[in-house]
Length: 448
Image (tube, rainbow, N blue to C red; front, side, top):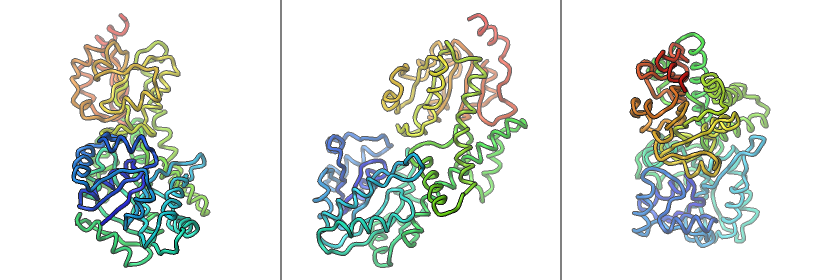
């Protein structure tokens, strides 16, 4: 099948390359000429494991092409996927300008029947909005249908998630057009859910809001564990062993970030408020998430006494491991607070440092974790990269000037950290929080 994908961000690029890998002829369209030129040269605009190799293979075999020419791409295609950005506005509503722009471009190019598929995360009612824009702006009286096909991929595992989804949701105005999209996904042999358009749009937001709520609940339990002396790692292990709950999205830490959860929760809340429903649970989810990094920063300041004149190493910058995405990354909150308090910051992340330099050009960037920690009064772990989980603690201790490790991801065993002489502070492990600095370590601090 001939497919046009509008937008070459995480969703568009992954969608395009996977459909090409399934044997379709795919043209990906983006209005950014520089980005398209880089893609044609095999340079990826994002980091995603396996993406570069898959793009190269399908481009070499002629199934995947890139262009800025929306008109020709639409005319060539039977199915057009809209995969453009839908960022939040200041009031929490969704900025639909890119979706509208894509719909106008499709309307101008349509020369025969097309299936228009909204894959961008969009509010309920967008299917009708896109139909209205196309009907108003089309130059030829040709028929079309609008479908909702939300994505559920996770950054860092986007290829795997697209090839092996838990479910494929197709919201269509009738069974015939639904089967047209189902045919595209048939080679994956995954469960299909066919609904009306509005329900498909709601499924995406409801899913992300529930997962965000699960994270905020875990963090609320972690905060309580600190007060009563319980260990949240053991608590959520016990909770997650219940099949009705599950282990996923129960890790306590610094809260959710990235490009999806923050904006999707706000957008759903805006939709609810506009519809006359206050949605108090969702408001509490947002409030808890906003508070979590502030609590962690307070722990760092309490442990160090002051940020003024301190040298702090920040390990991990991206909002999560296996991505270079800095959107809503908790490292931004942490670094901003450290700098505002007068600390000097050295940072290391395996992938995201180039993106971080655009936000914090004034801090020092290291080639590895040990270089970042060299001479540091404290190490702050923000992102759960695998290389941090297996770090050589003895070498880290020798490299540092101080003994403080503030772990926002609970990567380490508190008892082991104590044996190495660290003053270890993590999240939600009440029995291990802010333990006294060992005598020899305290001597080292006072001798500085």
